[in-house]
Amino acid sequence: MEIQKLLAPSRVCFDLQAKSKNQVIEELIALLDADGILLDKEEFKQAVFKREEHYSTGIGMGIAIPHGKDASVKVPALAFGISKAGVDYGSMDDQPAHLFFLIAVPNNSDDTHLQVLSFISRKLMHEEVRSKLLSAQSYNDILQAF
Image (cartoon, rainbow, N blue to C red; front, side, top):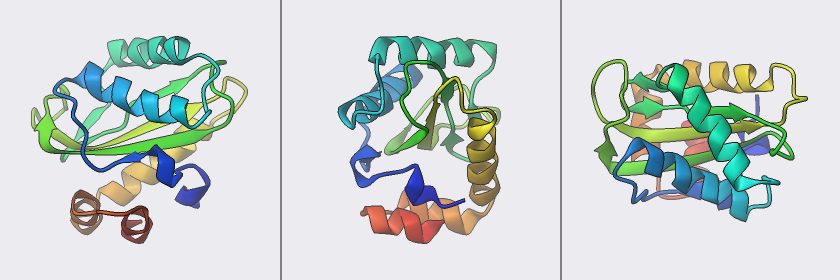
């Protein structure tokens, strides 16, 4: 999987200002919306929040991968953000999350979100990848980390 097909430079934030899980999601959704990925920002936000109600997408190791599959999404896309301070995301390991990947896919995208989720999760299992992402200062740094 080529991450640059889903993640554009305009969908990256190297300094998230969010202090809560909901604020992180809103900040990342704003990136997707500003890039023209969403037909309806509020509808997509509800889809992501509904998903989070089932269980937290904070997978541990400082990582959260919220995702939503909804008709309000035009094309599969990814937004990425870094929080240097960390955010209490309700992660499985009870540690703050610093790396956030928001996956957005249209309803008709079959298992695209699962493929993306699997790809990101496998890569982020490696300390070296997480470390490179945490210190990334450019879009190219992110691509190099993967």
